[in-house]
Image 1 (cartoon, helix red, strand yellow):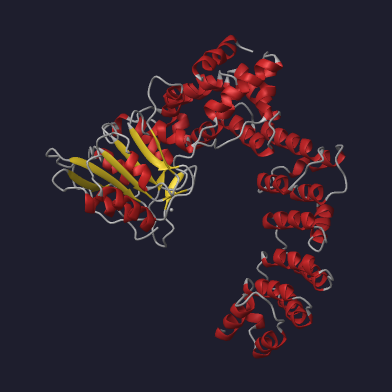
Image 2: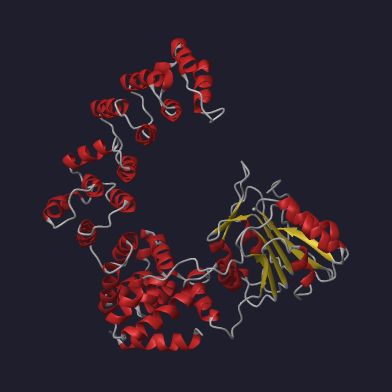
Length: 562
C-alpha cells in the first residue's frame, strides 16, 4: 500500500469526530431590484399552497417574491444564476424522494429539482450569488431533513482496511468512522448545499400535504411575521407544526468535519472546473483508501461515464486520464476491493468504472464479469437480484462465451436461480428449466422465472403454448394466480394461447384465478377474443368475490368497446 493512501485515514479520523396546483409566477426578466426589500425565492415544483401562504402574510413593502421556475425551460436554475438573483429566503415545495430530487405528482408537470443541480449552484462561482445571502430555507417535502444514513456500511469496507495493514480492531473503528462521514443523510446533503445558512427548516419524516402545511404556516404567520427573514430559529413555527415532523438545522460551517466532505463534493459539482481538473481530483481520490473511494463510487461512476469521446481526446483531459490509467497502485487497490464487494451489483459497477478508466480492456472486463458470475454461482445464496443483474449485464450477449467455463465450475446445483443465470448466458437447456418454473408451487421459483422473462421473454409461439397449457392444468389456485401474473407480463398475442385462457375462465374454481385471467387478457392483443360470446361467458360464469369492481369488469368494458 502506498504511503499517501495509508496516511490519509488517520487525518480523516481526527476530523470526523408531498400536493396541489402547479406553480405559477412571473418569469425572470432581469435581476430583481431590491429597493431595501428582502427577496423570497420560491421553487414551486408541485404545490403552490406554501408559497401563497407566505405571499398573503408578508408585507409587500418589506418582501418581494421571485419564482425561480420558468415553465418549459429545463435550465431554469441556471437562468436564475445568470440573472444574478440573490435570495434572502428560499421556499422549496415539492415531493422529495428522500435521495435525489424534488418532483411533482401532477400530470403534465415536467419541472423537477435534482439535488445534483442544487449542489452545482451551491459550489460554482457562476452561481455564487443565488444562495450567498440566505437567512432561511423552508423545505416542504418529506424526509428533507431526515438524519438517517442513506447507505449502510458493509463488511467489505473493514476487510479492505485489513488488507491495507490495519489490525481488525483498528479496521472496525476506521470503518465506522468512514461510514459515519460518508454514508450521508438527507439532512447532511441539505446542510452541505446551504452552507452557513443560519436556519433550515424541513421534515425528518413524512410532511403534511400542501393545503395542510399552508394552514399550519398561515397560523404561524398570523401570529406575527417579524421572524421571517431574520435568520433566527423560530420556536413558534416549530410549535405550529408540532403535529408533524418539522425539524430544524443550520448549514454546514468550515469548522466542522462535514466541511471536508463538502469540499470533495464541490470538486464534482463545480461547473467552473475543467474535465482535466475534475479528473485530477478523481485521481487524488483514487489514491486514498479503497474503502473511501467506495463511498464516492456514485459520483466517480457518473462523472467518468459522462465524458464523451471528443472530451476524452482533449489534450489536458487525455493526459489526466492517462495518468490515472498508469497508476498501478490505485488500480490494484480498486480491483481488489471490487472483487471483494458484498453486493454483486456494486462489483459490476466498479468493474465498469475500471474499464472507463482504462484499467481494463474490453476483454479484461468480460473476464472480470464472468469471474463475478462464477463466484455467485458457487454460493448458496442466489436470489432474483442475481438473475436480474446477470441478464442485464448480458443484454447484448457479450458474456455468452463464458458459459462453458461456468458450467464446469463447482456450483450449488439444482436451483431455479442457477438455471436462470445460466439461461441469461444463453444455455437453452437451463431456459427450459426456467420456463417450467412458471408453474412451480414454490413462490420463490416463480419470482425467479418472472425476473428472467422480463429480460428474455418467450418469443417462440410453441413454447408459449406449452407454458399456457401447463398453467391451465394447475390445481393449486394460489400457484396458478402467480403463474398467470407471470403470463400477463408477456402481453400475449397468440390466438391459441388466448383461447386456452378464455376456456379456463368458466371452469376456474377460484375468483382470484378468474381475476388473474382477466389481468392477462387485458394486457394482451384481445382483438382475437372480442366476441359477444366471450363477454357473455365472462358475465355469466364469474364467481362471487370480495373484490368489488375488478379487472373482470374492466375487461368486459374493453371488449364491448371493440
